Image (cartoon, rainbow, N blue to C red; front, side, top):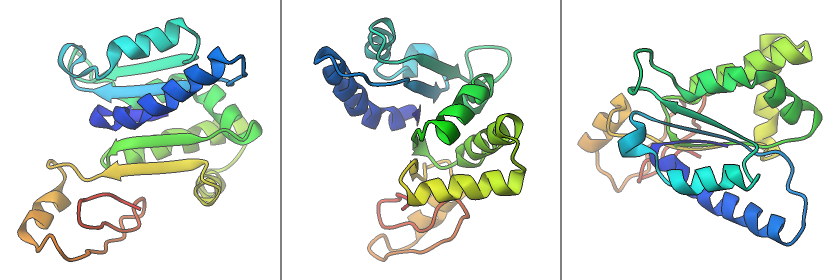
Length: 184
């Protein structure tokens, strides 16, 4: 799971459900949770709850990236690179699922991190690894719920257009945009 900014909100329900299953004695498997925002002190949404899930063993690994807190900018794709062998194994060998929620701008970098993991640890080439990720979308194992933020160039375009019309774009990683700005 990867949540950026407010994209973390949907994962609370996932994690709460997993905690409930664990309380009932059911095995939940490994959960890697990536969260990114600019500043930990101001934008670590649900941070205390996330830390509790880590302590309780619901989250196996938390890759936290706060891009403006240090001298060097760190994003979730950098944290994913640290875990690339495990991510490749979970996606490829263990039929894992990867969810990304948040703005659209990190989608290509997250995609590239996953492709590179498959290339490095599963012996694939970039084209086959990309095709494999695309096939996971059909199986709902690579799920993107992303929105154009006000910082995105298309958002400025949308503010000038009639918000009641459905507007179609093909961004490669986002098949269309409907009024409200979400990709499907």
